[in-house]
Length: 223
Image (cartoon, rainbow, N blue to C red; front, side, top):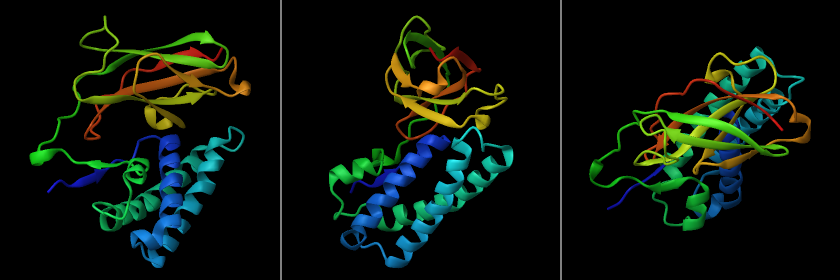
């Protein structure tokens, strides 16, 4: 019998989107999916707290190290509640449609108990300016820099980035993230970001959710 698993993306922006979508779907379908009112209430409360703290760090005028710490602490609580609902109520639940499973990031686990090892190479990324308000993510692999292909079993290049401000020291200092599944995909920016520096780090993520080593910092200016 095949078993299901799920993947929670990395990075504040991707995690927020994932959680907001999951909480919405669970709340709407709780009765049909057999999720108890107690769990729904607990999950909604932890997401509401996280959502407020995430909003503070997403605003440059209110962002601070203390706010980032508070957001991360709230995420740790929400992450526990999400894992509880996924593992005990959502995985291998025949009442959930294929479309909803895809939206919930639920997928079949690798057969035979096998697992693809973590990537051992790093992305070589450049952010190219080709149109106003966008930077295109062009990548290759550190083992084959003349191509624009991902390594075998890698599903996307995970990009963590910061818009404006002081250059980050590590990926953890970044506030935005994106999963780039094909080279040359665009990153879109708001009008107020034009002319600001973008600082980014990248790593490969494989089909089992295992991550490779972070690249060095990448920089560009939003056109």
